[in-house]
Image 1 (tube, rainbow, N blue to C red):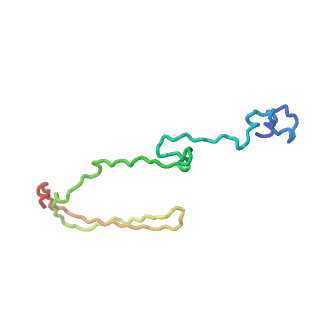
Image 2 (spheres, rainbow, N blue to C red):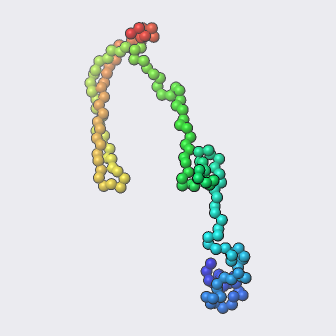
Image 3 (cartoon, rainbow, N blue to C red):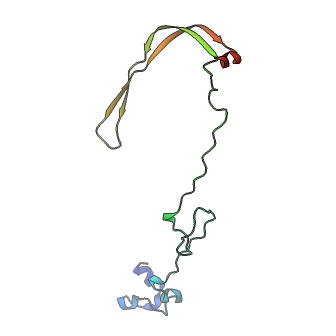
Length: 147
């Protein structure tokens, strides 16, 4: 509180002086006059409902927030029929002719670490083989199992 506000709120103090501005027990409420800096009540955290956040074993105090044990949820279970179905190679028989090789344009990706001046260029050029499928035979399950 500034001195001007303090003086206006307490008109009975009279003129300005350092001795008169000191709070006395008669002017101030009882709780503020008798309390010292170290007499505040300790803050007690409520007991956690999660069993992994156990209390301190040496005392009956709750584990402090900085040392709180993590309790992540279980990882999600994968979906049974996600992605492409499994293809058994024994069922399919294919005859193909190689027509050529095709390459895509050169890709240049500039890689750099955070706040670094040095940059590294990662170059990649994917090449693909072009095939012409001339014959495709699909076998029965009995024929595939016999092999």
